[in-house]
Image (cartoon, rainbow, N blue to C red; front, side, top):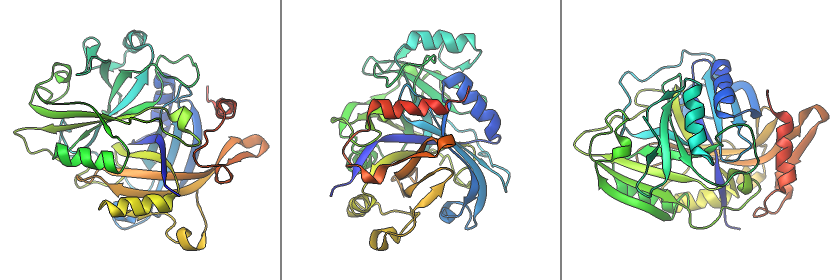
Length: 360
């Protein structure tokens, strides 16, 4: 059985105060459905946490308009460490998270009225003519609102969930190969080298860049594919400057965009696929499960199997095979995803029941 990638499940964002940040993302970006809320110990991530288990609080929140969620993440046993240099355009790693909006003009005015720090003076256009603008949250993280017509369900928010990310790389061709072969981004929407008008509002955005926007030519399949929807990865490589690694000298989970996480099925098939292309798992929460069907990993009220790989520059990519999620915790109603055909999407009405857990 071949593996399946259903879309971007979430982008991780490390913060210093989870309750404050979670409230900000909920109020301003519409991520108001918490499907995971877990205080626990990150004991499977020793490679990226100094070789020691670390206590943390993590919340995965969704926007019902569709797209990926945000995993808001805070260390509890150590002081979160910010980068000791100014992170700028072209540095290696996840520099910007893309958020989709069907009504981008309304979103721009909405964000302006809320006093959100807009980096773009007006709505810009990318190299394909698609509208977008940049803004910064109160914690120094940069987001890009991108026009995208598809939504899963209507909400009051002027934007939906995560559409993708802008990732700094050191070799554009090597990165395109990785994101195409491993993650299925097989369509190059554009690929150019130069100075770009719509980057001028970003720190160091006036330099020369290689720039490539990747998408997937076929619709994603799987249980959450309708809700996660389309996604894109934009790769940028700066010229004439040696970029810094965004997480240089820091731990996974420290402030900033931690990882891009993909919802998958058939982790064994994916493990073989990644190894065959020279990118073996660096973390595996359940290495015994392939042979013995060992215990699944629990995270709050959800459970599943997670793994990590690194892109050619060390940017973390997470895979999660979800086994169960809560639909209505008060009634003990959980959805067991392992009893379903892996290509089959969940019915819309079932996914919309997640709104019953909305935090107002």
